[in-house]
Image (cartoon, rainbow, N blue to C red; front, side, top):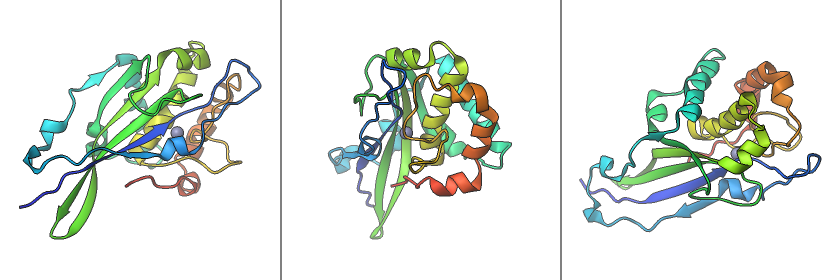
Length: 211
Ligand SMILES: [Zn+2]
């Protein structure tokens, strides 16, 4: 069996912010969908994938949102595959994002793919994923409110677990590309935001971001 390895990193960033409550700073939309190609790994890299997986690391207060997300999705008819859940190997607070940091970005879902070529057929599979939350910006945005943080994490989890991109302009939801500081919509309409996020109508509006 001959396997050619390559890893593509897709950076997904979350949400806009500024010190001014009325003004929304949005990252260039492209920042959310840029892919960076890492150098192809030598064939001597081997055939065991576990060699390339980072150690598991979860900050408990962030990881708590995973089971809540899975439950909320399931009760609305959306199943997250076990394999996808297990691929999320890192969830942590950071002072600097490992990838994709830019003006206005509060959090990011990074997804690492492996491309295999077998019998001339290429296939891409998620190898592992990581969610990082910028401590300073996220705390400024949420002001210590867990529900606002939960909405932010649900945004990133939808990127990592559902492989979904952002809602189109003019459609408000958890997967809007920009969150507005001071808006606090989650405090007023959380159950509606959840129903919408996992509805077929909204899911159809979010582009698939699988490689
Ligand atoms: Zn996003």
